[in-house]
Amino acid sequence: MAAPVSVHLEFGGGAELLFDGVKEHHVTLPSQPEPWGMRQLLVWIQRNLLKERPELFVQGDSVRPGILVLINDADWELMGELDYQLQDQDNVVFISTLHGG
Image 1 (cartoon, rainbow, N blue to C red):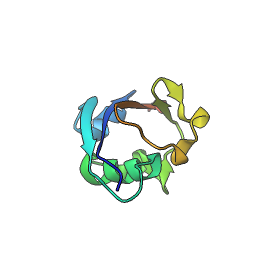
Image 2 (cartoon, rainbow, N blue to C red):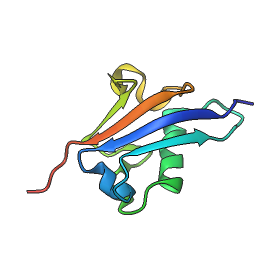
Image 3 (spheres, rainbow, N blue to C red):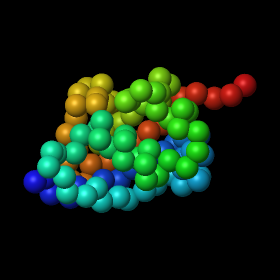
Image 4 (cartoon, rainbow, N blue to C red):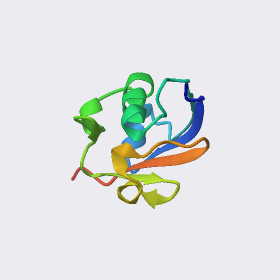
């Protein structure tokens, strides 16, 4: 059984508007049989934090194109994207690069 994992989540560039305007969330993810990965984190965020318009944040089982994801200040593409296994005290940042005109 994987231990609970505490992570710091940040939403910016307008993405915070989907989360009642709250930019920072300190969350403890519950114990589960498998280690927490980004794929499971996105499902958890959708169920527990996302307040409106999920189509602006997720697409399929990943984030929508146009949302930059950083894990501990590194582009998640360098970290394995959805396959990255979260570590205790990780910092995950979601920045929307999409802006209305």
